Every structure is written in structure tokens, then in C-alpha cells.
Image 1 (cartoon, one colour):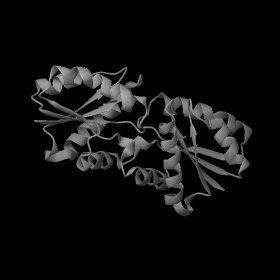
Image 2: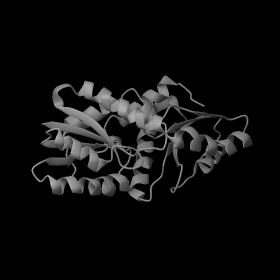
Image 3: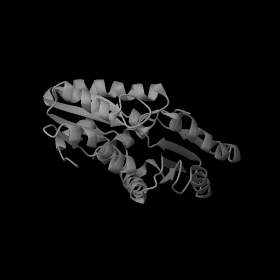
Image 4: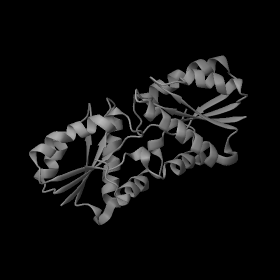
Length: 125
Length: 125
């Protein structure tokens, strides 16, 4: 079983965490047959934590877990904190592949996404 | 003159801040005639700060400044901190329009961008 785990930072604003959960549900639909399950976890503040989410993936039968950092830049969170929080799962389940994908900001489509926001021209404040 | 200001969080990792600066330069090219200038600012840690960047826009002749928060979710930074840091410029230059666009994570293309990362299949760690 193949599992996609979206990892976001986590916020004190619940609406912000719910936004990640909504995105995850939409992504699960859009991903089609690519994954058996798609779920999310948070590095800080919100639940589930990364170790808890990995436990749930394994309990659900995951043999291959792809972790997609929902971050915009390759800061400390992506380079150090997420790998560190993946360690317990990697040690506890050596037969489960747990691999990180590039973070969201590394996506080729970012420039086009930003220009689409500009062109939509919806001003917030 | 119309100016696009990309506002990122700012990181202790200089490579991460440089990534935002690179993105800004690429966006300036891709944006074509939409703006007279495209620059970036950081909410915390890195330079220039938002107030400093707004000063530079105005000094450069900007009459219309569009601020694009380079953030993934509508957390406190987007909802409160960026508007707060735009206040000094709005008060000092009432004739300059300073407006916020929706943040990056609100872009319609995000699901496709994430799936493209999945499909590229480049595993980092």
C-alpha cells in the first residue's frame, strides 16, 4: 500500500490547519489511483504530529510512505525538522519505505501560480 | 508606476531567503509588462523588512503597490502581521495605493502543482 503524507507547519489558527485538511481531501480525490491513502500531519502546534501520522499509515497497512512538505522554501523545517520527526518511524518500521518528496515551493508551477493570483486581481485588504 | 511586492516569512538559512530573491527575479521576467518593478520583502529575520521595502517602492515612484504574501495558509502572519507592517507606509503615503493580493496557498493551481511534484517522483531523502 502506498500512502501520501502532506506535512504542513501547523498554526494556532484552526482555520489555517483546516485549510490544510481540506487541501488534503481535495488532493486525495485529484490523485486518483496514485495512492491508497492521502493524509496530512503537522510539524508543530496542530494534530496529528508527524510520528503519530506515520504510525497511523503503518497501522493502515502502508508499505511505502511518500512525505510531501507543504512548505515554500528549503528552510530548517524542511531540511532538518521533518527528517528528524521521520526518524522514529524509520527506526521502528525498517521494512516500510518512508521517503521525502521535494517541498511545494520547489514545484515548477510556482511562477505561473503566482501570476495567476496577480491576474485574478482579487484584492484582499 | 505599479509595483509588485512579494512578501515571504524570512529564514535564518540564507539559502532560503536567496530562494525567495531568485523567485522574485524570475517572476519579474515572467510578469512582463504587468509591473514597472517587482521586488521582495521579509516579515521577519531577513532584509529588507516590509516597511523598508515599501519606502523603497515609493522612493522609486510607485503609485500602486500590490503585496503578494508568499505564504501557504491564512495564518496569523497573513491575516494580521503583514497588514500591520503595511500600516506605516499607508499612513505616511495616503496617495499611494497599497493593496494585498490573496496569499500563494490560495492559488487555484496548488493541487496541480503538488501532483506534479508527486509525478516527477524525485525523492529527496
